[in-house]
Length: 184
Image 1 (spheres, one colour):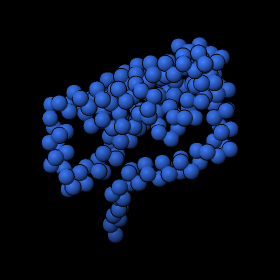
Image 2: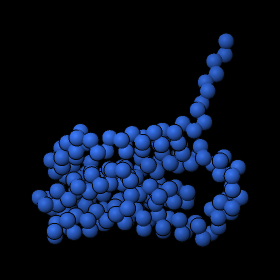
Image 3: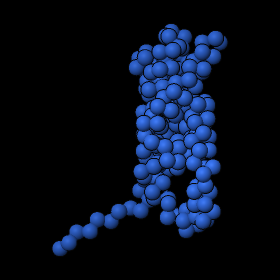
Image 4: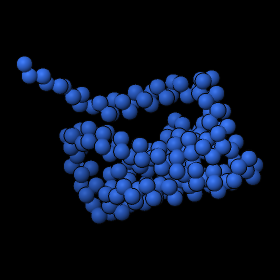
């Protein structure tokens, strides 16, 4: 007998939605608050861990709290560098998951429903340089990085360029936040 494995067509998209729902449900629990406090006690390693969580919509607030507390006792430049390295890890995970999983799953839906307009827009030379620029602005801002990462994922940015850009932009954005927190 020949075994055929059935592949779930929208597995990555479903996992993304499920993980966001679970994260939303547990984000305001006592366990989550205790975990945030614990991460803040790890110094520069805590900054790296906070940086990983700094890039997501649902975890940016607790990560900012950790960075705020770390800014009171540690060197702001080193906090920004460590958190920037963590943010690269978080952004890279999101980038790979979106580019290799979700985008590939949703591509047939875009082609079927309005794909002509979207394909035309994505194929223009303006999009080729505008998408990474808008994505970089979003990543440098204190807003969560998912939309900026998605724009960069749709463009033809190389992996090393993505890593370098997200490190510099996240580190600078975190440095501004840490310096503002320290001045309060």
